[in-house]
Amino acid sequence: MKLSILMPVYNEEERIADALKQALAVDYPCEIELVVVDDGSRDGTGEVLGRADDARLRVITHQRNAGKGAAIKTAVDNAEGEYMVILDADLEYDPQDIPKLLDPVLDGRATVVYGNRTFGSHSAYSFWYVMGNKGVTMAANVLFNSYIGDLETCFKLMPVALYRSLDIRSRGFGMEAEVTGKLLRRRIRPYEVPISYRARGREEGKKITWKDGVEAIWILGRERTRRRPAGASQH
Image (cartoon, rainbow, N blue to C red):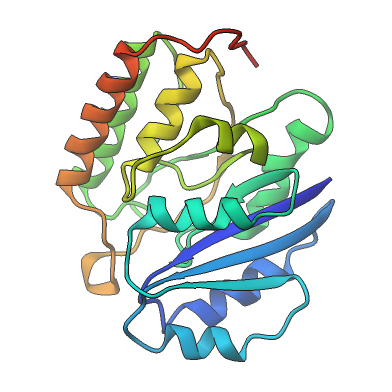
């Protein structure tokens, strides 16, 4: 199996070199590629990426910022692996956890795996950020009669073909809710494994806001009212 690690990047000049180094240093249990999409960065991110040299790395550039969902779509369109996982470039997530996401897939227990963050005082950006995340996740559980622990997690591992079939339209952070809503609508329940997490604050460049939470709930409601695709099955 080949795993495509998809990294959307926007104005991460200070962190992108470390993000690449950390992602490529992991001892993965399978072949990997790292597909980085520079989503119209206006700082020195592009120059740092231009100096990176690793046969497993591919860099694609958007001329203008289009949003996380659009960057992931470009990465998925160019992915060559059978499976994919998203890894943000902000160093909040530890790529050393990715093999833990792969374990249930490699031993046949799961098709879709989410990394579940356990928020604590050392890993929470703010009280309202954590409550917002929990609120969006609860909305998904109520709407779809499911029980997942972390809808907004970046670590979503699944077959590339499955992600492409979801036809994600959200161009921004709403893609997280759209992915989960469409999976749950197909009765695909993600397998969850605990992961480490260190949230950064606004002064460090955190981009998500309360408006993204409102949009996420709206998207979940929209997906819940749509008819389930014919032939959709539970995983």
